[in-house]
Length: 284
Length: 310
Image 1: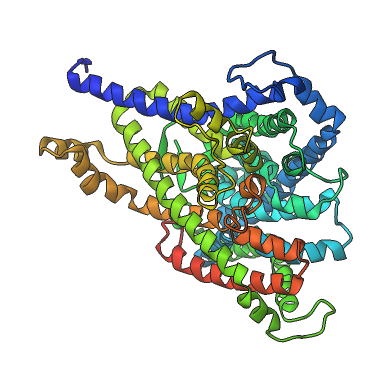
Image 2 (image 1 turned 180 degrees about the vertical axis):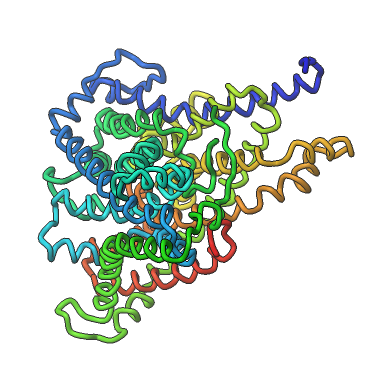
């Protein structure tokens, strides 16, 4: 169909431009300002005029945050905690979703497991952090990464179950059955046939779990005390709530906290919405 | 390409084919063999805290049973009602604003943007706020609203709209609006993405038929598109309500619940009772109350939710 430039078309384009422009400004400026502030020097923080454009940009704040304040340790903790969480959650998720998607089980069992998993999504962490705090103290794993890994895995499990269920159910049963007929056992059929086929989905789930765990703050705030296990968001919070805020350091820590999730998002972007809605909205 | 479809899963579709009764029971046994240890462990890990918090709620710090005294203290604390009010106000600001803005923007893009490249770009940009840690967003908000350094005042002054600095985080009303604006900023894209994907499922024929019959953009929305979006509104309500009840990070960073207790939502209040006042009896009682209320709310909401159920 040929495009006609009628007044209506112009009106349509004008509305689109105004709408998209306003949105980009509202979303672009705060992020722009974060980056610009992080590039400021200490001296510029105290100058009376605020420059809206970058003015003698420097990376001093980044080295101040990562090296002088020793935040690279927190970054390392975050990576360790998040990667472990991803592995534990995916393994548990696969153990639970494999039987309910690939084996002949009563529908009731499937539905009950899925409903139960969903109900965990509605649980406010603050209501359970109180008993978990007590448990973690009793087990003497307070201020240890393992405490966070355990709790993050638990809280991401519902999401993992729902996402993996969707991915596993899409793979035709015949492929696995063919392997079984050829004499493979269930484990080989799972490991050699199913898992490679489900790999993109499993990886996407992993990326999203990583992002969620990376953002988590409340549990990390309560269950850690020292750089031994503190994650990066806890460090960021420390820069914000201290008596005198060093604005460029604070901004730099914000940029660092965003960098990894945004990078991962480039890979996992197709699955983010599916993840956030437990697979109800899917991308085709 | 980044085109979304709505696909409410059905419980019957991926069921394996039945191959005789014996095979089925063997598969079922295998399923239970795999499921029991895993689910059992998770169940125990989830349940122990509930039992613990229940016990904590009826005992004093030294472990002696005090009956319902913790509950009466928790319910008699006037700060609880401030927290509930703040949570209610926050929810009433945030949810309608996000749904309205998200819907407007979804309709705007759906009606006016034809190029798939632009749509894909909007999709990617809309995801950005969703994956950014709330703590980092709190930092951004702080840079914008903070007294004496916030850039919002600077911009308003440069534009000549303002002659005296506004203390965004110091005035109770403005502080609540500032905190809510951060939530709206972060989660409107979520509403947009869900509703936009919903609009893609509206059959082209029915829209064209309506347009031939002279439907305006408003009647087209009201009588055709809205019916396709209805289940998605419920979905959004479910997820956003669950999130509002756990809001903590960005408020903790931005105002810490202040000024006074005006932005101290329920999670911040509970945090304060347990970890600032060290009143674990009262905190446990609050946790039990919240858990029970949430369970009731959850049961009510899932009844109408378009998710996989029997």
